[in-house]
Image 1 (cartoon, helix red, strand yellow):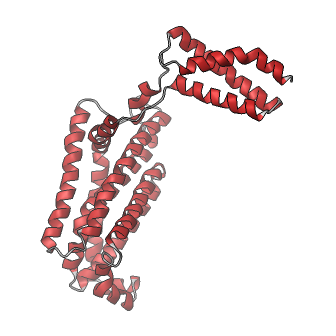
Image 2 (cartoon, helix red, strand yellow; image 1 turned 90 degrees about the vertical axis):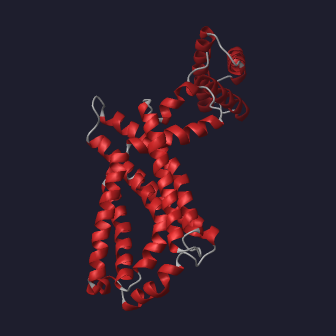
Image 3 (spheres, one colour; image 1 turned 180 degrees about the horizontal axis):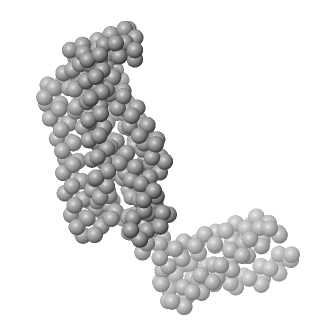
Length: 331
């Protein structure tokens, strides 16, 4: 292929395409022309790449095609109002609409945890089957209490935050398979039940709940939300909603999970701060629990107040629908 001849033949189209991509507003005819020229330019780029891969021409055409694609789809500009809408509409309404799922998960988890913890506390032989005498003594005497204060608070907060965010992400990501969500919930439940049962049987129950409650209320609720939404994803393709195909039902529920994932990052950051700075503090136990209960109650009020209001207006929290106009062709 004669590269110079090819460039001379199509230069006018490329210049016109470049001109249209720089225009802020286009008429309907110009928008159609932009799309047609973009399609031709992508073909030209493919031809040049396969037959005469001149690096200078490839770079120019690649840049032109990318600019034209951005002009067709529309450029999304960051606005602080979008952040405000996310935290006042998208996140709370998505969590609110999934409330039946995460409340059910939370109640089931708490009920099984309390029963299993009571069983472990009342059966020393079970404790010894799960832990050695040395491990039990270490847990009761210092390990459980020292866990919250053995590292600098800011480092501990970051460690807790990343770990809990990872657990929440796994619950959301594996929800389509259903079983992994139950496995992660069971793992956390068993750890809490064994630790609590051992502490209670050695008259350290007040210390256990005094250290767990301040951050645990919000932290576990965030995990319940992630697990509930994750299970909702799995259920969406098992039993699609009325008038929905399995793929559409799964897509809509997964988009909701993306909203929840982003919001829970902030929620878990707050719970990590409480765990690192309030739980091991020298405040009286009652004061620490009241702080944790206040933060937890604030989250619930936030979700139900903002979420119910947005749901009444017909909001769904679907981030794709909200963004469609931003990615529409500019005419």
